[in-house]
Every structure is written in structure tokens, then in C-alpha cells.
Length: 226
Ligand code: ADP
Ligand code: ADP
Image 1 (cartoon, protein in one colour):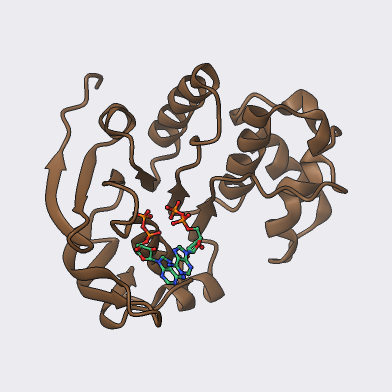
Image 2 (cartoon, rainbow, N blue to C red):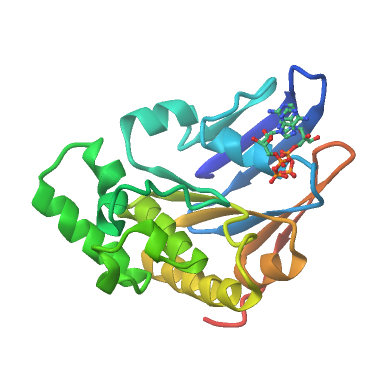
């Protein structure tokens, strides 16, 4: 059975743009799946639906058999990483990471321990007291990823998270993300227009066509490592 199900999903924006047309497929738990296709083919729209940020015009998107909005209201199972790190400049690295945990209750001590766990995972445990302006673009993205991981989501949604980074930093973060995915055993939905990135990272690739917003192929990628 699928963790994420697209059931004949269609999306027409109120401008009249058809973003998705009859997208129908399931994503199993534990996959790293990339949505790959040219700009405007509906990748972000598809991801935002899984995040409960956009409603389907026809059909439905379900996570664990439930509406994404409900999953988000009732659990920490879905986390989102955008292209911009979106950190609060007046909060330290640790305080930024703790933010989503604060909204869910628990003690300050637990929050700090959890923040340390995820900041160590992204190699930033020495930066807990630093402020965003003191960090490079790659480090800010690491904080953003740590913040998403802090709530131990089942499902990590990433919309072109490395697009704004330089080539070397991007490659480093790609390797780190693969490592985290393998250790944490979560499901990752990753939007990219970069074929190389999709092949490098994914266990599956959902290829989308721009005519308009259709799923044109679902490809299993043979991983070069166990
Ligand atoms: P991608 O992520 O593949 O670049 P998007 O999902 O962002 O594609 O967009 C798919 C299509 O829907 C594009 O034609 C885009 O211009 C349009 N679109 C995206 N968001 C909106 C919106 N909020 N309102 C109207 N049209 C939109
Ligand atoms: P991407 O290609 O990375 O999805 P875009 O530049 O297409 O990003 O879109 C950026 C933002 O603008 C998104 O929030 C999207 O919903 C919105 N948007 C995109 N196309 C349109 C459109 N035609 N009308 C209104 N909003 C749009």
C-alpha cells in the first residue's frame, strides 16, 4: 500500500491554467522519489498538494489514507523544505530548529536535545548559538533541513532545495541528504528540473510532461550502493 496516493488528480488554477491532468500513482514508504520535468510542468503544484497547501480540482491526494491538511493538524508526519531556507534572522540556529517543536508542546530541555541531534546530523553542532546572517547559503540550507528533521517526519517534502547553491556546496549537500535518508528511513519527495540530480539521489523518478502536467513515466532507479 502507498504512503502517498495521487488519485486521478487534476488541478486548474483560478487563472485557468491547467497545472495537473489525471495524475495517478502511489508512493511507497521509504522511497526517495524525484518529481522531474521542465519548468511549469506542475512539480511544485503536486508537492504543495501533498503538503496540504493546495487543493485538487478533481481527484484527491492522500497521505496515509488521510487528507494532508488533517495529517499536518494531527501529527508531525509531514515536513517541508523550500528553495529558500526561510530562517528567522532574530533567532539563533538552535532557536530556529526548535521553532516547529515549540508549536507541539514538550519541555525546553527535550527541544534542545532534539535540536542538537539534528544539527549534529547536518554538521552544525558548533553553530547552535550563531545567527543566520553569520552563515553561508549552504549552512542556512542545512539549518532548514535540520528544522524539518527535528520533528521526525515520516515524509520530507523538498522543492528544489539546492537550486540556489553553488555547484560544490550542492554536491556536498546532495551526499549529506542521501546519507540522512538512508539512516532515518523516511520517505522523501523531491522536486527538481535537473536530470543528473534526480538520477543521483532517487530510488524512483516521476517524470512529468508539460503538456499539461501529466505523469509521463515512473522509473525505478538502480542504486549503485546497497
Ligand atoms: P513547476 O514546479 O514544474 O515549475 P508549477 O507547479 O509551479 O510548475 O506550475 C505549473 C503551472 O501552473 C505553471 O503554468 C504555473 O505558471 C502555474 N501556476 C503555478 N502556481 C500558480 C498559481 N498560484 N496561480 C496560477 N497559476 C499557477
Ligand atoms: P517554480 O517554477 O519553482 O515552481 P515559479 O517561479 O513558477 O516557481 O512560482 C513561484 C510562485 O509563484 C509559486 O508560489 C507559484 O504558485 C506562483 N505562481 C507561478 N505561476 C503563477 C501564475 N501564473 N499566476 C500566479 N502565481 C503563480
